[in-house]
Length: 128
Length: 155
Image (cartoon, rainbow over all chains, first blue to last red; front, side, top):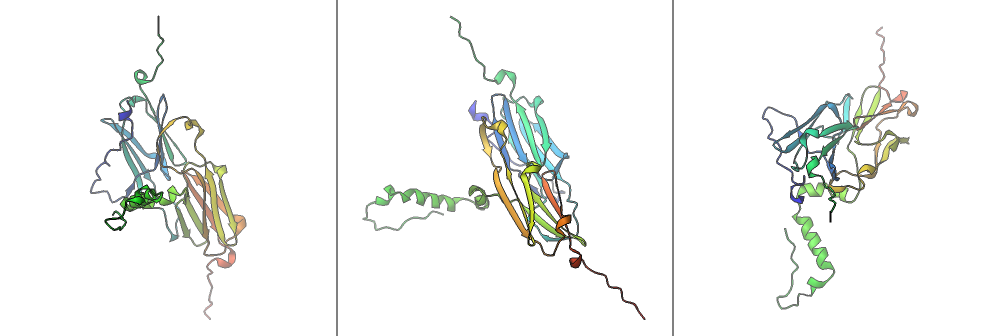
């Protein structure tokens, strides 16, 4: 079942015309173990309340909205873009979508996507 | 764009076997890549320069750096001769050492950013906080650098 892993990235969701905000794609690490997948996505400035994770038709969408930074005064130098984060992935059908869990820690989203029990590799004992 | 080496039609194709044939294809590959790939070049050279903002308020300067996924103790902030240096190391999570890697876009390793401060600051009162993956350093201006209001007595 190597063809259906989460390698393929699906198209970005359409942007509503009324949204003036800018969006960018978060950098991710994706790991696979026998139990499932783990996605680590970088979303600095996003709190738990700004986070939206959804699964529809086997497509996983991650959205992270940032609240505007608190520091005021005059901006002398700027490198950050302040854009919100959005990225979508096609899921391996082996993933049990009811058991996906998410954790947000210091601007990194950790998504745990367990594989359904039936798809996990198992050892078969050979009888005589 | 493809770079093609000029040669006389009758010349043997010796260069195809030469060690720089691979270098040539590497250069061709670089020219074929899009602007986005060029933007990721510093990452390929394993350097990470986290995005940094600098601002000025009446009494403070502030610096904000996006360094998600750090441990507080792995961030170093120092001030030396009007230069603020922020450095540290982001370590990969040991839990995934054995796992199969499908994507690896995040940077792991040492980074360092420094910024020349536009005004003198009081080094004893510098404060730093790390929230939601963003480091914010607040640097109170030195007394002599603060804007002064001069009262003019109208006689």
